[in-house]
Image (cartoon, rainbow, N blue to C red; front, side, top):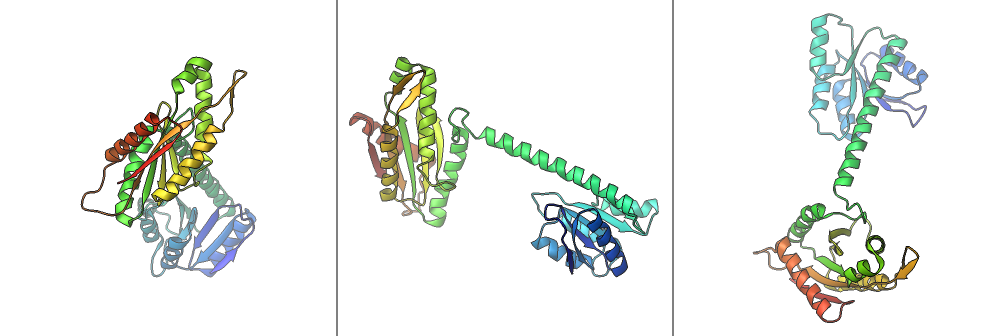
Length: 316
């Protein structure tokens, strides 16, 4: 195997060619065009390498020992992948029937030997254009997906995401025997804030509270969802009741310390929490998401009745 590296920012290209002279010419052309390349001599070696290292462009000969180009292409197309590989087939067979057979295997383009550098350049431009379109589409899909699961006001996850993801988190409790804690928080006397300072002030309060909560939990592990109105759900995977109470009390104090400014006015607010911890104990009857939320809501109701701005917890 020979590797040529000219620019780490260029697309990696895998060259599959059993003829050493043709392989050297191809690598020379690629280097002159500013690409990096790795070369192997048969389809089987190429497939094994591809399984460990992704290549966005492959240039493969048709006739090779162990595995030919079309078979290599079919094998790659049958592999699950999040990204597309553009495959160019090299062939000395220029009949229409043979070329159609090659294209039916899943190749994107072909080059007839001997390869001319100008033709190779054009094929690579087409490849890069297709791959860039794929990347643009993937980014757009990711952005749409992100918008679909986020609350537009606070930036936290929305109710739809919570319903799906919380059920998954509860299932993991019983699969991996790890504790799970859920905090149901409700901003105290929030209607009074809207009535006194206006709805824009209420929106700013929600944004700042969501930001405060997000900064108080483990990034990439814990997550926050807006449950509705002024209610938030905070999910703490692999967290027992003691650890959960520490987090809930920290958030309660941080929100109580906020000084929220809106339209020239400053105000503060508090939050009450109902906390539920699921213990990996009796697996004969796993709890449901509805049961967890009802239990958390019961604790929250108690916190409100006991004077607000406090944490009430239970275990199930």
